Image (cartoon, rainbow, N blue to C red; front, side, top):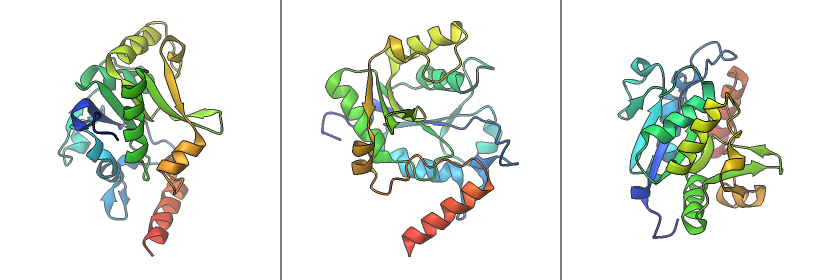
Length: 209
């Protein structure tokens, strides 16, 4: 990140929603090599921001985290409601949003996203993999512009996380750039079930050996 984009202009918001139905238990609290998964994600990304928030409708389960906890500003809207909450409750110009089930989340990708927003005046900097798959829960947003656009989408009963993209300016971060920033290629590895969890731990142990 260049010297003009520092922690003071970035809020980090960890999304801790989801039912963990395929896991059978709350995955954000499962211990990843001895540390709760959400605490690992926090540890990997907190350095980019002056303000860190966790969006959760079960804050009592996260009392061990020394982080500001907020619940959905608009209830019952699922993931897009959580994204709106991130924009509504954060205070910085740029909001880096990360899912709680990404054990290899990349601070470098988020930092570069913020830098590009500042340089270009765009509203969203988002990884797009294979020219097809967006990663809206590993992306950076211009708070005020995106907050208004997301609210309009919610009011129109649009539930897709990227349904509002046509109304803002989006910068895509392609595979080549993401690979440069995350040579491991693991930043978007998300945990859906216990097999994923076990594999992620094995990968991390392999990296340490």
